[in-house]
Image 1: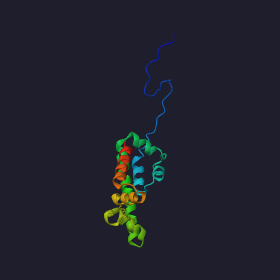
Image 2: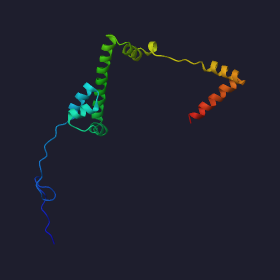
Image 3: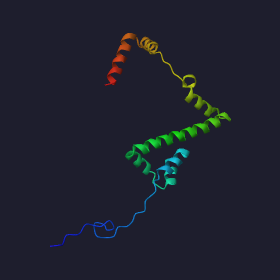
Image 4: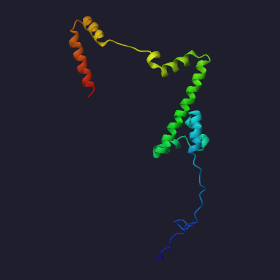
Amino acid sequence: MAEPRPPASPDVGARGRPRRERAARPDWAARFLEVFAATGNVRLAAGAAGVSRDAPYKRARRSPHFAERWARAREDAVDTLEAEARRRALTGSDVLLMFLLKAHRPERYRETLRIDIRREAERLASELGIDPEAAIAEAERLVAGAGR
């Protein structure tokens, strides 16, 4: 019968081999978030932080705190992008200018399409020779059924 092994010391692993000291790896999150906020690019930020492109996504799933910091960094990146678009818009890009106006004052600058459903239903019913009220009722019935 084999003799029981004494408890492993902190310097010895389960198989009796000396444990290798593992160098503490610096946390890459701060560098990732810094570069991401500046570039808005996951690949570039992960590369700068010395991790794979998948590492931030995995960490965000495990850590709500990291996910929240990443979301704030994304907002910073979009703010930077918007500031650059504004600068370019004001120095001559009509297209960028319109995008910014539509984003910030949609009630005034977005394209809107208004359709008078009743008038269209009456027009179509007239063309088809059917009762407009019956056509509208049938359309409403179909819409209600599609919502189930």
